[in-house]
Image (cartoon, rainbow, N blue to C red; front, side, top):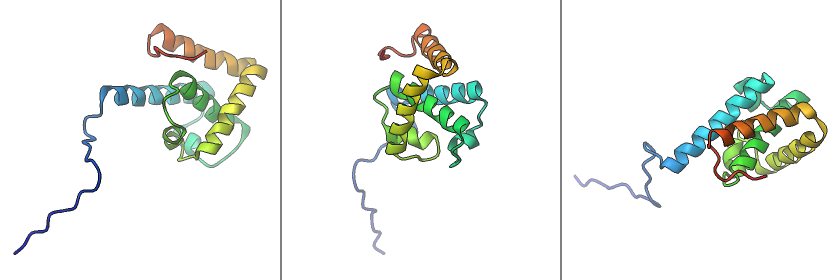
Length: 130
């Protein structure tokens, strides 16, 4: 009997032990999502849902703004996977909404600034943008 070897296309990456940088980014995004869910009282299911009530949209906007503000190297595509496989265009719109909310809603600004400050105090974000 002839055994056929599987054809491998592209580099094979061992996902069992991600690089420290990737693991840190994943931990940060997970922490940001947990913070937003606690601050806005929105569940993970609601964050991932297709519902577009203002409360849910604002929670998603805060999450996108925090991640892109504090970890600009994380792509919109990666962020979208965390909140229900949203596309990059929708995430760009959420980030724009967050910028408007930061300018017009004192509570939104307070909550997002508190997270940024906590990360800086913990030295979680060495390259945070202002």
